[in-house]
Amino acid sequence: MKGVMPNRQALFDIGIAGPFVGLVLTIPTIIIGLKLSEVAIISEIEGTVIPLGSSILFSFIEKIMFGHLPEGQDIILHPIAYAGWVGLFVTALNLLPVGQLDGGHMGTIHCAPTT
Image 1 (cartoon, helix red, strand yellow):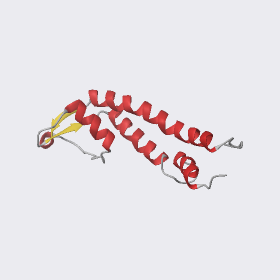
Image 2 (cartoon, helix red, strand yellow; image 1 turned 90 degrees about the horizontal axis):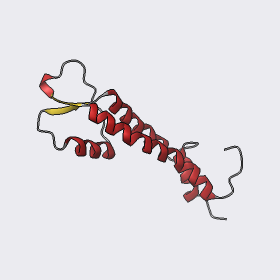
Image 3 (cartoon, rainbow, N blue to C red; image 1 turned 90 degrees about the vertical axis):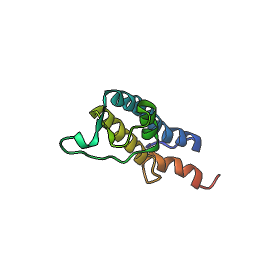
């Protein structure tokens, strides 16, 4: 980003490219990880359980893959599914309209006065 952008559309295109590619790579990772994950009865789970926050997209893919789980059951995520969750989290952070993050580049377009 050392050069001067020819117009705001170019800045927006650069700003959206990173999160878009991240999302395109993350969705198949989530699907593969969920295919390798297992449904277990919560009371029978041994060891430490790390509950994750659930995004709308991750929950939607989860519902498509597993349907509605009965009370007392949960999904034990495969490490690849964790990687997909982290990918969604990092993409969401990248979209924040702060400084040099891609969200900051996209926000500049709409906040800056037109010339």
